[in-house]
Length: 332
Image 1 (cartoon, helix red, strand yellow):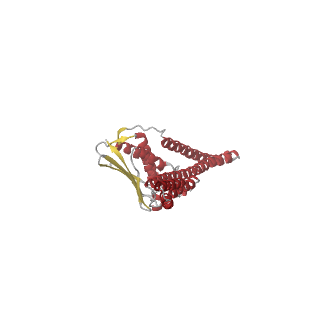
Image 2 (tube, one colour):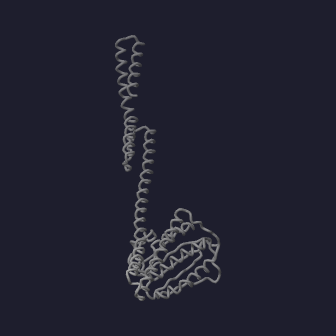
């Protein structure tokens, strides 16, 4: 391109010299044309050619995997060239974001598969061990056989609960779980739930409280799935409470919504764990979690169900003081 410009400039200067018919004027015109071509070459190189070469080189590097590299062009490069560089950088930014997200998802998937394998293996090995012991002769001792069968049955229940939660979580995340939204009385639902869980709370020395409103408290949502949400939250509040502790459920109308709060006076959650408590299989104290039962998926399911209701779950907790979980539902 530059060569063509130089040649054209010389030819133009030659034509001018021949027009004037003077050898001196002709030589001067040639020199002037060469000088003009040289200036034009430097101008095009600075504003166009070198920036375009930088774009080509950097794009090649990005394509080879260096997603953090970006194109830098001189400030005096042509506006059109700068626009191309900015567009390529924007694409590189998007690509880098997508790559980071893919790596995060791959890491989450790997962690999830490792956790699932571990959680399934534990009850399966326990059941296998108890049954092998019984087959090896322990079945002849009625007291031992009854104890081992109860433990095997308990682990079978845990395995069934884990598989049910895994199926629920998979259906929610894939969109296969259909929600049936309608208006229903939330206060009646909470009252019935607390009555159902009263025995479990009493066994653990925990008191349940709910100031049921005198009038019905209509909300819009999937009654079955919200029952699952409240069951998980109240059950956790009971399990991670202390002897003589309490669990309170409060409902408050506010700006066309009903805020639901489940508060306990239990062991609380250390601040560094609060942000991750709704992750799948995340446990603050793994030994205690397995001791009191649970699959480690309950709060993840709660989060997904509430998100399907256009609601955000909020958690406040202080270690040794207690935990409060809040969410909002559309009022009827």
